[in-house]
Amino acid sequence: MRIGIDVGGTHTDAVILNGDQVIAATKSLTTADVVSGISNALDDILTSGGVRVEQIQTVMIGTTQFTNAIIERKSLSRMAAIRIGLPSGRGMPPMVDWPDDMRAAINAQVHMIHGGYLYDGYPLADLREAEIAAVIRALKKENIKNIAISSAFSPMNADPEIKVSEAILEAIPDAQLTLSHQFGRLGLLERENAAIMNTALLPFATKVVNAFLAALKSRGLTCPAFISQNDGTLMSSEFVRQFPALTFSSGPTNSLRGAYKLTGLEEAIVVDIGGTTSDIGVLQGGFPRESNVIVDIGGIRTNFRMPDILAIGLGGGSLISDDGKTIGPQSVGHRLVHDGLVFGGDTLTATDIIVASGARDIGDSTKVAGLTSHLIEAATDTMHAMLDHAIDMMKPGGQSLPVILVGGGSVLVTGDLKAASKLYRPDNAGVANAIGAAIAQVGGESERMLSYRSVTREDAIAEVTAAATERALAAGADRETIRAVDIEETAIPYMDEGATRVRVKVIGELRA
Picture 1 (cartoon, rainbow, N blue to C red):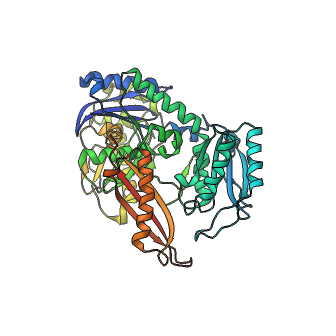
Picture 2: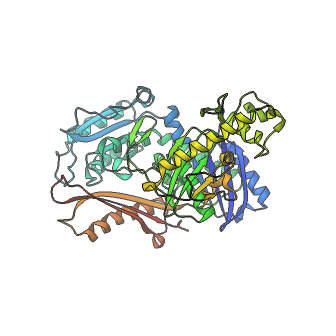
Picture 3: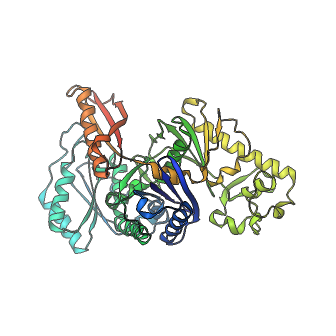
């Protein structure tokens, strides 16, 4: 048996799965300390499912805490950013385009030193021992131990990052380091940004992981625990302590994986409707389609793997205009159970419209008896039109696909959607995100720029696959089950020597 938990901004959802069967499921309010909400959810499902804690083999947790820390500029630690790339890049120092409040939140010490490579392996410059020593003195002077190291084209040759990290650890043994080549893609600025954000989260990551494990232990759960990452796979608790940034957008990803599990559809569009937004994503081969563009996290450009998600301001708590023709993006969010009309509040929300239409029995329907049929019909039509438009925007090549509705707000859709070839409303759709967490596998990804003139295509793919496999093993995968699920080759025509960007993603089962 597995437990899947997804900690959202409004609800903490939890399920117990016995193979493919849902034994118990619950939605409890997310608490300010998060841990209490997890504990409450665990109590609910263990009691209602009649399951003993020793029957649980693994626990999988999805969380938005690290994303929220970046967006809200909270729980971030002071750190240092070291870029290895001089003499190039001097005019665009680290964090050059960051929002002022984010720069202030981490108050980073910035260093730029010589070194790094070009895409073809040609060195930009040699590392200079004197520069490295000066950086270490500056770190010691201000007692900075959280450090991000980024080097030009380090996914091609990581030696400069490794050598600088070794020198720092020799001088500061308890330093916490993020080397950009370990999880970023090609593109120095965006990879550097991801490494810096990850480093600023490291102390908070230790606190969060310890809190999660304490919540499980307090309920007698001593089995292994894993955290969801943003490509629909898992990582061990120790791996999360090193790479908390890999959890960004894991919530929508879990919902897509849960939708796949509930329906068995490998190719579909998933609409996850919550209290504030509807997240629309695409399943390809049973996994979320990844974004191929720069992804903005809290106003900061990054380029590591993220699901391709379109979010629109439609949820159960969305505010409705007087004529019903405008919905959201403002929402009462988690205060729906206090502010919505059917709950005794004074705010007209999307949930009130659905109750007034007679389609759902939520709260006290007498509180919305005075709404006019014209308003109800207009608002209902607006909701469906918003979703149809968003689905059309996400269709791969305009191809018509089935649509799976999940999330607690999926009750808002009372009829068919014109943009869907077929509409699915699976059982347990309200906790699809927790189910997605519970079924997740372990993955790894690697990327290289290689020349097919100097190495065969087969050897190039094998090299990148081996690197991705090592990352999956580090995250907790069973070597015997690892397989490649995505191989992407992009020719770079303006570069010499037939340069090709090769990216490989692998997945495997959890290591016993």
